[in-house]
Image 1: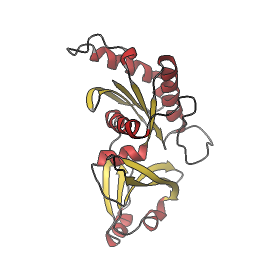
Image 2: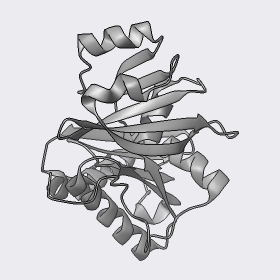
Image 3: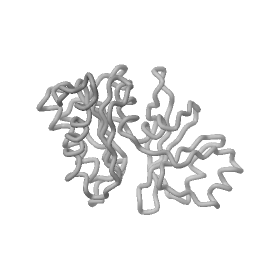
Length: 228
């Protein structure tokens, strides 16, 4: 069984999976409350799991893998999720798989385009722009992460690219006109999901192995300069 934890944005999401089957998923959009609600959410997920026939005796000890979102995203949220996962993996001797939020967005899109990019709000009028590639195993790998100014986004993308935009990030109508002229396809309103994160993390683990809980780090891109 897999536990997936996503805390990189205002959304706090946890899921329990058996291979690719989602057994239970809880998500709450409560900014700055991740530290208070994450552990209770995991406990609640197991409580609900125990009501399902065949899973009535399942506990944390039955976990085989933990998957965590690495960002880029909220500095504080990422640290909270990763700290929880590290403590859990150390105590239970579990492998951990880290997944970039760009990989999560690409996987949620259901697309298989070769020139695929994602953006994540970096604040300060900037985006985290990521170029991805489709792996032989069927999930997206990261080719490059970089920071770009919001007004430079169209110029940073090649013609005929596909850009995935998460829910909550607004692209201006002026920028959309430039996209249209350059044949850039925009896919909007893609949501984060701990269950989707778990499925991607499982494939990464099967093909690349896990990460050492002692050294796994959030993917910040921009140097840490304050809490948000």
